[in-house]
Each structure stands twice: as structure tokens, then as C-alpha cells.
Image (cartoon, rainbow, N blue to C red):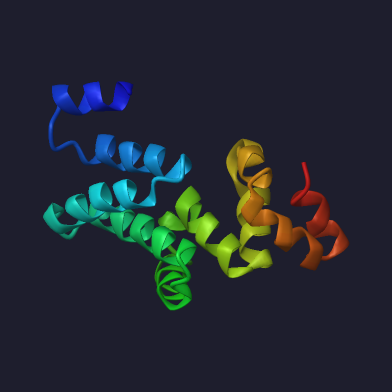
Length: 139
């Protein structure tokens, strides 16, 4: 995997480790993603990088049924610049927050969420959405 090579060239890069964890998350290797993100979270100072790892870890927790952790993190970052992070939108989708997901899809520059709309996480949301929102959540 090319990300492993990038990490060899720049060890300790929070951005590279965020992406590596995301790659593992996307292929369903939650334990590997969590280990990478948790290690970065523990060594990151109180910065935006630590916030990103907190959100990423909450995504895994929510995926595993940790609804309270997902809600806590979604509320913590709802009105911040982090609201545009894909991981936060995915947490909202897992929690069934149709309004948040539709808002993020519709307001994202270039509406670059088409891949997310095809995610299985959103199937249940489309059935609960109003007709206008349903069209946003369908591909």
C-alpha cells in the first residue's frame, strides 16, 4: 500500500496516519484503523489533529454500536469547521440524523459527497427523508 511507503518516508505524520487508518476503515479492518488512530490520538497535542482523531475514533465506536459516543462527538463538533469532515457526516448517517447528512451533502462545495450517497449507511436514511431530502440522498 502506497500509504505505508509515505509513512516510511515521513514517520509520525498525523495526516498520513489519518489516511492509512481511513484506508483500513474503508475495507472493514476496524481494529487496524482503530489502533492507528488511537496511537495518533494519544500522541497528538491539543490541536486540530487530535480533534480529527477523536472524530475518527468516534466513527468506529458508532459503527460498533457506541451510539452515545457518536452523539457526543457529533454534538461537540456540529457547529465547528469540522462539520465538513466526512467522518462526522458518516457518524450522523449511522445515528440516523437525516437533516445533518442532507445539509452536509447539499452545502458541500461541488457536492462532492456522491460516494457517500452510495454508502449502505445511507440506505435507511433515504426511507425516512422528506421527498426533497430523499432526492438528495439518492444517486
